[in-house]
Length: 201
Image (cartoon, rainbow, N blue to C red; front, top):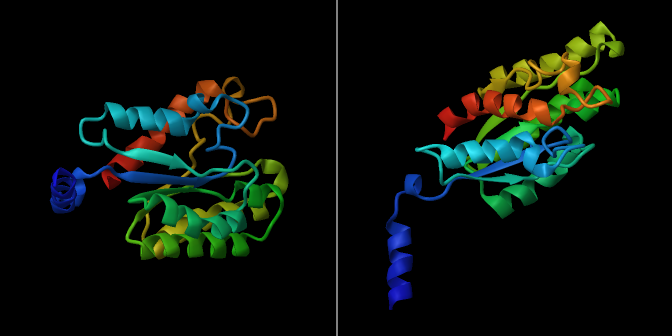
């Protein structure tokens, strides 16, 4: 009887009072490559949520894989959505497409389809923009980076322009490979993303 009453009460609770599920679909930048997982921006963002008065019930599920591309994310998104049932998805993919010289058009198509599948569930999506090193040439770099603002405008979704803006050109905040932020940079990234995420919750 008590269990039955508990189920009834849970069903009667407004959605806003139930724990929010947040999904991060990303690559090595979100998977804390080269550092301890608890030092990564995703873990730090979870800490910020726990300390927040309004969002301390939110739980982040990190489905990020180092080396993943937009095609890999598209192949994984349905399972991740079914498993975690997120109210918000942070989409951080594309950098590996660029580093491999893959088609920006294909990348845009993949990110578009991921976004549509997320929106079909009723979840909100936050697009995390990335950039690639200058040695890829201006034309390709422009084609690559323009995918993010184009996608945000066409699908009417919020965009964090470049999540490594404050750290990418600072050697003291980057690992030896020059591509991945170190532990020192992670709080800055978490703070940047939090300013866009919190209004969505």
